[in-house]
Image (cartoon, rainbow, N blue to C red):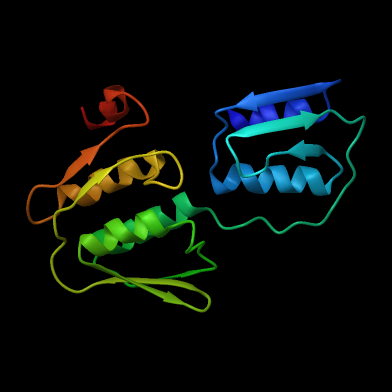
Length: 172
């Protein structure tokens, strides 16, 4: 989606304007990396990007940020197994909607200097969540959260508002 268009427009002739661009941290990071490589991109972090094509990009050194979806999936895995987990370098700020739901479910999420500690003490509690575009609860976390809901003590609700009801086809 947005990332592919962003990369293609960077080396295309002329200017490209994209509206309703995904505002996830991963898209913003890619835009910043491309800009540091010599791309001309306006509107980073917003829903509208204007990219002025350049002839070439140059190399840079960049450390890729930790992925909020992967970290959230590991956190849910720890909760499901009643385990304890330290997610080093977890992107805690980007994970706030995920952490909020986990805490509602009774999962202990402690922000520490080098990441996020996750553990459980007691039953998984029911929760109610609706997916939303960033900065809301990420739709890509919905399948893992469904597994957590299956072991919750009570009825949980997961509402998909980004994609249609077909997003739940994996549950059949």
